[in-house]
Amino acid sequence: MKTAREMGLIGCKRCTRVSPAGTEICPRCGGRVQSRDPMSLQKVMAWWVLGVACYIPGNLYPMLETKTLVSTQSNTIIGGAVELAQHGNWGVAIIILIASAVIPMAKFVIILGLVIGVQHGPQISDGLRQRLYEVVEYIGRWSMIDVFVVAVLSALVQLQTLVNISPGRASIFFALSVIFTMISAQSFDSRLIWDTGRTPKPDLPPEPIAEKERPA
Image (cartoon, rainbow, N blue to C red; front, side):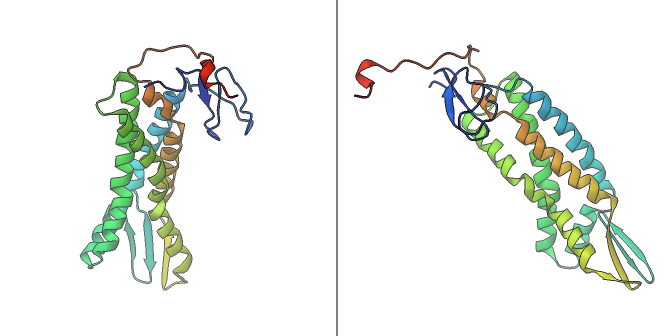
């Protein structure tokens, strides 16, 4: 199976329009057209490292701080989920654990696996790697559910000296981790998936149309 690059074609990543190889500016959207982003993996890993670095304090520091007349309580993400489960709110606790622990860790592992697959050869099919990339890019935004809940509670529960809920330091780190991971996934040039195992070839002009296939 030939790729578009081997057929002398190049696609715009912004609007997906296909143009002949050598085109530098997309005729449709005016964006810059590149056959492959040579710095894609470096960008991915730089944002990935920042995402991991922010994810660690995002789970160690308190996400939510509740102050009352008699006490002050701070909860980390995991600690808050455990407390919800102890009070019988298993559904909410499971949703928080999935959004805060399972999804972020899965994104880190999949992105790293995609980079390793491009550099050292894949262990799974190209089609499956492409689907994993699309899943990571799609579900990335849903990791913000914790930050969203904290923002809503902080805005609604402000009863002066009686009860005061405010976001903890973890909210900033966790939000940054989600943002950096999303940028990391978007920096990955998915076309590199289909180049693995192929002999690098220069961008060629489009193949000529056979006489019998030319339009009348």
